[in-house]
Length: 360
Image (cartoon, rainbow, N blue to C red; front, side):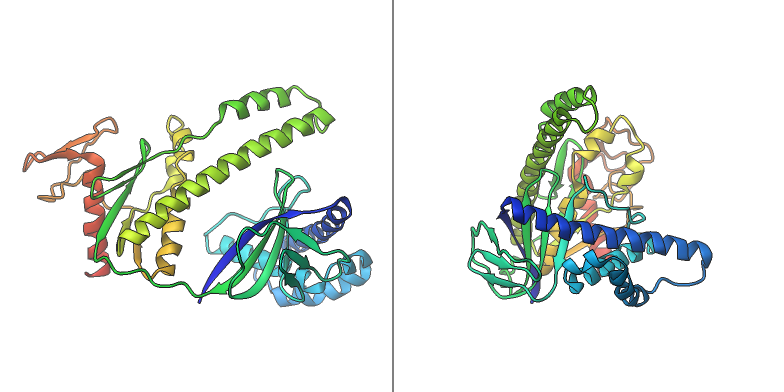
């Protein structure tokens, strides 16, 4: 059984919007309150480890002090503390940055782990008098585990329904592929397939941002321009996700073993000449989609060490070329005089190192 998410758009009234904002406000207050408390506790005693159960017990007293927190069911507030604890663990294991304080202008969300009901295209949430209607564009299958109601930066509301779903295993093709990630093309496979980068429409965003910078902050015109920019960013994000989902699904369906390189994107972004092009590539999103879809359909993905000379090494005689400029797109070996496309050559080396690390 695998975790699967259905996402639907909500159709809400003015009263429902106000009720959801109370939910979001309680969630935001609890998160920011205990994030600040965690920082203060750490400053007082750095040896003491953060205990989420201690904060969960303290939440009972906080609800007595701020009675308006009782408008939200207690399981949603406890889920907020669990999410904060996950963010803390990611920070201390160096997976992610330090948790941020949430603002009203950022994306809002609240988790409903229990006591909800879904009937056709209606959702009943505890302590909310009116049911919420959503656009049901496909059937919800298998057992529902939890809900997340969110309000995006484009002021539209969505519900994400988490289910446990049984996904059928894909047929084994006995094919292997190795993928090189680059700037000119999003991905290059070892069988000479190139997936082009899908360029985003940024000219209109830049024009609106220029106009917004001249407006008085939080005036009516400023808010209108901010909403337009958010909608354009959302449209670009939707196009990007759709494109990456199609690419990742086709690769996972065709190959059983997928070798990937592990790029240090944070270090690469220090090159200001290439930073914008790197930001537009979405390498991490593509790798994440390949990894979880391969896990779904019983395929294998593997990221090799980032220290291998995949671009500088000849895949025929294994000779390493010490100096290789970025402008040199064709690789010519000085030992065996083989000459191939640099990206295709790197992709072949990735598979070789993948087999070495997996002992295949």
